[in-house]
Length: 161
Figure 1 (cartoon, one colour):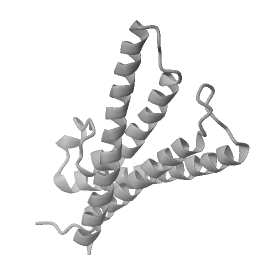
Figure 2: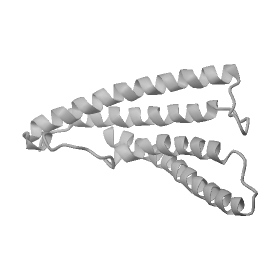
Figure 3: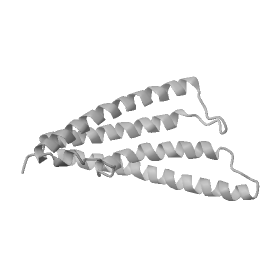
């Protein structure tokens, strides 16, 4: 059962990661185009806003895949000296605690997106609605929360070899 869940989680994390990669590519193209056009005195209006929005998409949509493949930086100088059983307990506690934290982040971003939509908040230069990007951040935090819960369950139910 855990293998089937892992496959589904990995597939959704990969999908979000492709969106994050597209956001990085769009940031690069937009920034380069703006710099080149500034040389000819034709800057692209709202570039700063769009790069900020795309940055939010990039960071939040890459969270799940990064965590799933342990691609983040972990400082375990102290913990690495513990026996394996104790390290597993610490990692499982950490996964649980982080899943709670990102669960709250998901919830509050979701509420903020709803409030932003109701208020009709838009960006200053482009007058774009802000709520889709806040919702994207919520989706990223929610997907990371699911990955962390899966990692917690895997660490708890993993059979010792």
